[in-house]
Image 1 (cartoon, one colour):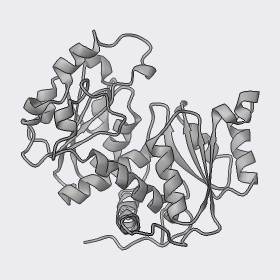
Image 2 (cartoon, rainbow, N blue to C red):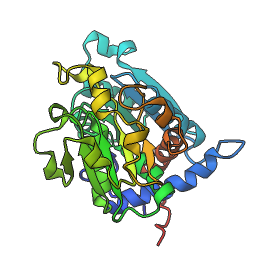
Image 3 (cartoon, rainbow, N blue to C red):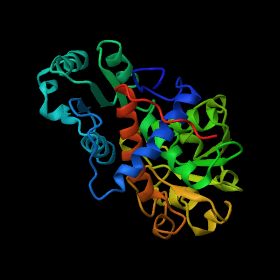
Image 4 (cartoon, rainbow, N blue to C red):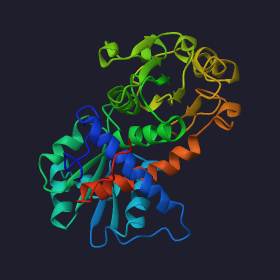
Length: 312
């Protein structure tokens, strides 16, 4: 038995068991990535189309590689080179792609809820690769897979998410996923970058970064998303770095074996210093590898693959 839904639109409504199924399956997929010949015939004859209305390096490339490693045919479209430039609607574009034989449509769009709208209007499986500031479920899943590799169980785990929470779809998906599996999540950032009533998501809200870092097992540092900010929400990048940037001194407040994560791309010297980003406690490069494994797992499960047994 695979997943309960044929789509992956977000983690808010994804059952905890489905999350665990994806993480378990990703473990098997990572074994494929480690091989000299990274190719299995699992999805031969299947077609995966990526439709990106926003720029992407890691997410788009990892979906492309995930499909290729499983022998699927992969096609990438961008809004700038499609009929969107001629005024074609999102739904019409999705239906056109499906009519060409797509089995899975991976979509990134600046509007929250875009992936769900597409899923309501096509028969193929839809994966949300980021919709506005709403969710980015596959990033959260790869983050959780990485955490489990280093920390094992989620129950009682203390995770600190630091930075631009207001504009971060990564933060929202991580919060939904981590809290469902029993982790304790704290968020910290300038008050202007914290969503109103975010505590209702089950997190501890801190305006001082030191409070969130104290005793943390996981430190997930977010990028300042200047492109999404419509007004100045803090005095300067230098001031932000001074008050909220993760340096060696601040990281010292977390547990000795705490891991440091970042969804990328990094603004070195702003939200994180080079000495931390490149330290032995950083698992940022491992996150990139795990992103391919998690996306392989999703493509496999959403196209009818059997779930891997959940470990006891």
